[in-house]
Length: 314
Image (cartoon, rainbow, N blue to C red; front, side, top):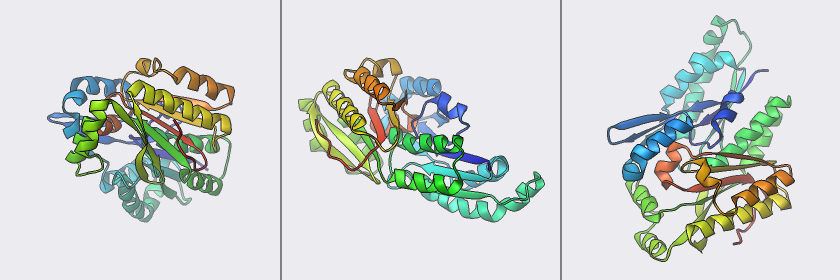
């Protein structure tokens, strides 16, 4: 059986990994003033757009996910021919309409695929599973990597589905942002009041950085640490502790809102890489999606891994 894997462009995985494993990306279009870019996980295009537009006006950007019609057209035009079963994994539905759009599109796809496949010489049925990863950015990458691993190992559709559903319930995403004022401005532009003016002002005045935790569709602060570099170091050290304790999948994903060379110089990151290597855990690092950067700001760090419920300790 030919199994396809689809993610949206907020899923932070390296561009070469996506290409090597034929992962299909549902692009999210970003508009900042007159500048428009459809995010296809092209890291160089993302960095160019970042340097030209995001730092100045990113808080007022408009993000436009694939519509129901666009998802339907993508599947009927290509995916129902190329694959027999597709797993479509989206950013958490609590933060984006992509999951709902994909679910609505799936009904039309499953109703209309037969003549398309028959015209291409396939008389077997086509199936589609839409999965809410219940997380954001680097944390979305965990389920996608697991889907690739299972598919390449010859696992069946039911085994993959059950494993991905179980895993999505246990993926933890962590994030540290550089600029709370940016985060607040972006949240206000989207009508999200989760980052208050007082919190942003206090955090910037004292250089206090919250560590944000995403889990099962919910996001919120779990620590406040003085200084961005210190906060990121504490985060990397904590992730290293969880790696040594044993993860639910041998994968850690890290994304950075800028050049990867800058990520690699952050205090504690080299130690995390060494810990992952010593414990047989694959570490994937990538430039954060353009969608991620316009939502959380330049220079943010996100980390994702699958683990039992736990408490962050700095």
